[in-house]
Length: 293
Image 1 (cartoon, one colour):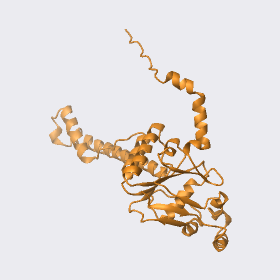
Image 2 (cartoon, helix red, strand yellow; image 1 turned 45 degrees about the horizontal axis):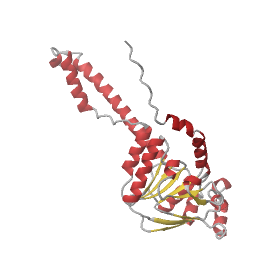
Image 3 (cartoon, helix red, strand yellow; image 1 turned 60 degrees about the vertical axis):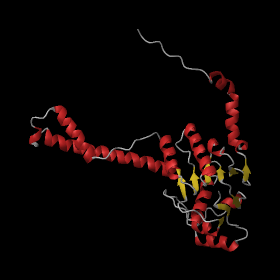
């Protein structure tokens, strides 16, 4: 399913009045992204069900996602730092789309970390509340303030204390590893028939969890009517079946297969060089230590 078909960046050569307006209105350090994508000779992006922006830091993949999100007025949680000219630039871009589904949004790695920190903060608050309730209960019961506890056994007091705490404090949320939390976050956020912009969703994920995320995105695109536009440099996300990949490290920006990207070839050459080691130990099972007599 495609909700966004095409995105045209500002044609700076064909819009001299717009360029003059930006340069007249703002200082030079506030012009960005004016000139950035034109230098890369990128003027238009055509989308598939899954489209990926690939490139190193500073290649513009996140900036491109943010421009699209701004143009479509997509909901987002994490703050983004932009220049004064950013909104004007986004307004002058063109988006060719069908109706964008309600609930479509942009999700970033910052959203994942905020979710993890939120869970931890809630659990810390619950621990603090529990400690206060324990002190309060101990002072009243074991200090003799409650007459009914005078002849009560220690075991009974502990049982009553446990019941008291369960009533007065919430249960803590289960805390997972960062990778588990990230995958859990995306499983909860991604709903059917929506457009999602994902900025480096693989951050904090091990290779195993990145593969699970890849499967989730593939199945959501194939069976649930979702469209994804993703900024990443993860080989696992890049290998999503049918993904159209824009290589923002190239000038002009080009559409390439994931296995032809320069950094992917570096991975391949490295593992190919050590292939014998992987083959030698692939089926090896660590020997158990003999039990001490």
